[in-house]
Image (cartoon, rainbow, N blue to C red; front, side):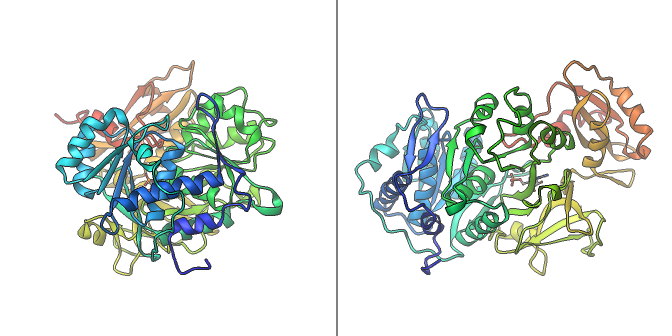
Length: 517
Ligand code: AMP
């Protein structure tokens, strides 16, 4: 950077192409397509930043946003950075009791919500001491833009240090209360620059990339990895406010990059329009946020001629590992690739002993991308860092001799049955290989003799019928008895959150009384 201002917005804006009248974002699912130029982004974020400045908020105020995905919502994020405050995105699925918790915990100075929720959200916000509540809707209506319309369209970005907060992301928190991960301008920019190199974002003479953006923007994947990637490369985005496999498949011929969670790839594979010809211009398909099935990896290769690039990261750290971009043949299904440049990654057992290549243990990381801590939870933060400063990811995995990382599950999903450790991902892998199985989730539930018992929840392939007892019998021939599920439930779908993660906490709750009264 040429200035000593570490405001992430400044770095993103520096990457805008020279031709500010070129299209930066084209909407794909509005009634008619809308075209936003780079100049529109520059002016729109200036007007919103001026509106924020006019509120004379205390430094580093949190601005909490729960709105449907729109280009204006993305501009609001950029404007919060520009004004030097802290962006706090909230999942659109959250309801009153959840919003009440986040607002009480984060004490935002400003809340922006959908018009239809203004009644209850403003009540919660005003009761918690928030001074300003605006509305923003998908159709560009609402008080936020009404007020911003009167603001000047130039704005000098606030000065920020690399260590200043840029965003607080509440973790999806499957157990206990959700925690706010504090990410700094330095965390986000360092990671975005590393990914720009690692994934070969094109600019200048190579021509510009075109990204299909179809992920939500309340989460690290869509908000940071996808948006920062495109902005920092001056790449155009084809913008979907929601994922529709047919519509996305239809736009692939005009795109070069796509990012998705595994479920999006599964759903795209169901589209006849997904062909090699449709993907002729594509250079990169990135998958992450949840484990990718080997079968999806292989089917994608066969169908499109492209190899999915799987990467791994989390709200607290942004991206940690990635499969190689080049050569494509070095991407390994079932692994999340190697630690990104600048990221330290090690595997240790429960006692803190470092483990050699191939052994399974807790993954710990450090680097400029690792967050500052949990918002107003110093004890929790201290617990999650080792004495020598590494962050305990809570993921369990192994690293092979060549540095490729395989994730076997979350540490809290580890099952201990009769004193033996069972890694759900291993058992799921065997179940998924059985004839007639589409996918599965393995959880531990209380058991009077074993402490915990292994339970599998299995989804059949379309047209196949599955028998739980037969699944157990088939597994007995393949894996140690203590890993074989004591109960197999056949269901229509696995419960997933918006990022495609299987909600194992719900499965545990549903089956917790199987062996106990
Ligand atoms: P979140 O903070 O919501 O992004 O969730 C982060 C968690 O998602 C990580 O700690 C992992 O457990 C999981 N995760 C992310 N990417 C992958 C991946 N490629 N494979 C398996 N799990 C993943």
